[in-house]
Image (tube, rainbow, N blue to C red; front, side, top):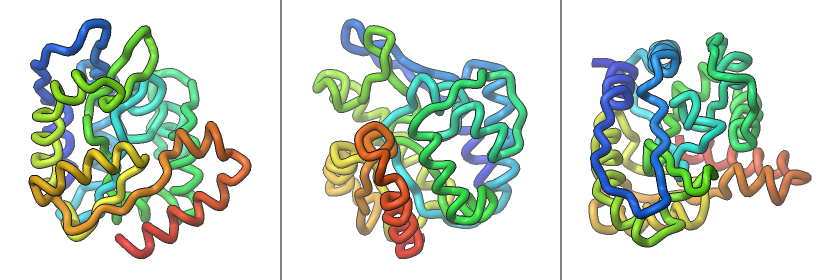
Length: 223
């Protein structure tokens, strides 16, 4: 099986049978037929090989980005414009996706970038509270409830073809949590932490180019 085969088979068959704390609901885009089509085409386009890649970990999908498309840090507009995959998933942009695809363009485009890196999230499914994005670590009860799911997800996805020497983790809280899991399970030899795209776009937008350079330096050193 290729890297693409393994990713698609996993994502389109995620089994989530966890009771969540009151008021928190799941974002699972993979039940949608158009998402299934787009996910299959995307991974067949860029991951149709058996090469190892450096993994980049986000937190969990959001309701305007990968929570819509099923593809890490990729909103429907980026999917169409940068990846060439027309879709009927909407035309709303998402801040983190804007940053990532500006970065990918600077790196040399989707084909070059995805030949070296695989973007995923610690939790492949997202969460909502009061109809707004919610992070797995925002609630101790939620974090404890989904930890077996997150651990299993990491373990399974490593088998796709991971560079186990290093992982790149986006966001300090996210990286702290992955670091704790890594101490127990020894997924990677080291974990590199970079500021999360959402933080950059929301609070440091004037310095976007500086952060892109920081990302590029980390990628070049750890691919």
